[in-house]
Structure formats: structure tokens, C-alpha cells
Length: 97
Image (cartoon, rainbow, N blue to C red; front, side, top):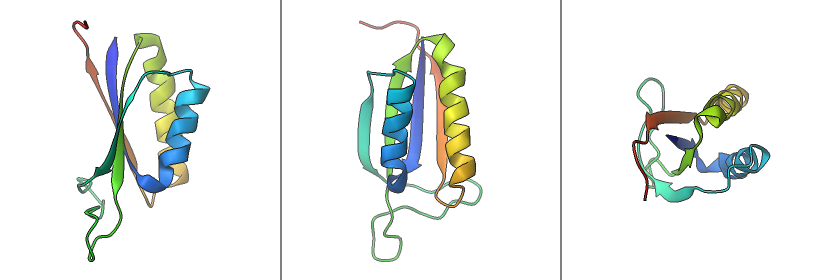
């Protein structure tokens, strides 16, 4: 099992939901109004007058065999909408209860 966290501009909300549906990823946790800035070229997303845009994040725990498909979909989304950005992070899940 792997944990995958996807951080994305809120303009990509429907696209991320579609990605989960298409890959039959049913379980996830959604974080709205996530603030931050990308490490390389990202502009701040702070929900302020100066930086009004906001990000969201989704965390899902999925079988290993779905990880590459999900990352491929995230990469495709990023290439289509590079100006708003989307990133995915993966780590091992040792145990769940």
C-alpha cells in the first residue's frame, strides 16, 4: 500500500475528482484551502488580496499497482495546465487499522 498526496490549484478540482473516478479510487481525504508555494516556479497560493488563488490537496491510500497509473494521470494534468501546477508525493504505508 502507498499513500499518495496530490496538491493542486483549486481550478483543477473537477479534474482530480475525475481522475479518482476513472482509476476507481474510492477512498480519499480532501483538504480545501491549502496555502503554499511551489519550490521552483510556483507563485504563492495564499488566499490573500495579493495572492488570491488557493490550492487543495487530496490524500489517498492505494494498492501499489495503482500508483503508476495515478502518477501518470497527474503528470498528464500538469502538462496540460502547467500554469496552475499540480504535484504528487508518494510514501509507503506500513500498517493501517
